[in-house]
Image (cartoon, rainbow, N blue to C red; front, top):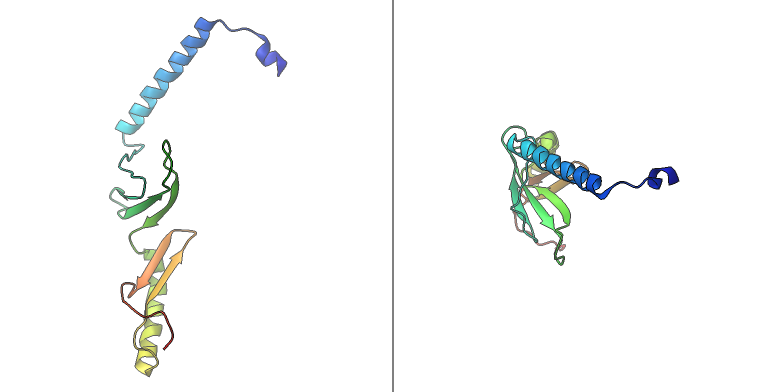
Length: 137
């Protein structure tokens, strides 16, 4: 390690290398952004915002939740997917069949289900907007 820092580098050489690094970084980032290889969304707010991804596989909006109270940074707490997961459609169909079976048997009047897979940030909802009393009758 001492050999690495034992040579003195002239200040002109250091400034030249720094200038070349800054210029090459600028043009590389400019190229990536212009060629759509990298997307930058500057529409973030401190409390949360909507980010719409492009067409294709990811055609759903995401709700970004950020932590308040910082002046220079905007820490990302979590991202919520606004669309239901297509991967969980079979689970949703099975739960709907189960609910309908209980309704036909007279054991159930209505039901609401919200299921979220936190490892993949996917969710499904069945009557998720239905109002109900959470207490026992």
